Image (cartoon, rainbow, N blue to C red; front, side, top):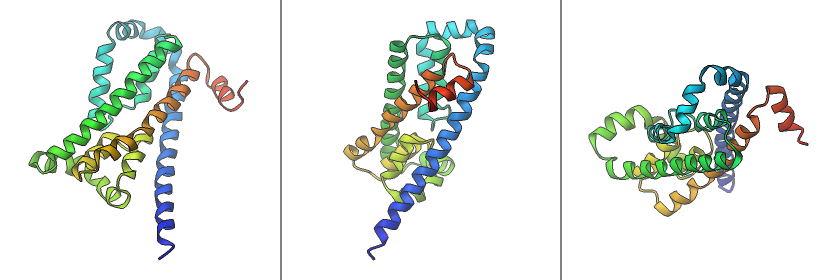
Length: 211
């Protein structure tokens, strides 16, 4: 009996570490592609980049829709778009903060969608069956910890939030365990920033052998 809490904690840790590893691996691939193709993108899509700069609301709208629909597009892509615009650090931080707020807000919306509509036929047949059912077992095993994992790893954050709402997870506890997502954005934002305008070898050197 005394070993059961420790075993459960190990299961939580392995679940978190597995998804963190997936997230870092996926992020490394995105960064490598971004650094390798930045010059090509700048040379061939300059007009599109300028258009995005002049109409940031469109970019925020696309990102908001993506976050509401289970994170179709990774937030790192949106961070990189601002790097392509040769934005200064203060502007990058401002846009990073906006992306963070949108993600957090989308999670709250997801929570209330799950809370209010979980008994409806649309939710059960379209949303739960297609997108959420694969995570229900994890919710039963980990409870609110699943939301924490969704906030800091590629596990769809909005999906975990809907599930949390559907089981009426305490809203104060929910808001608290969503906060670590802010640190994920800060960490990935820093990596994206230092990757800008560097070749892949300079980036790796800067990352592992700081000045």
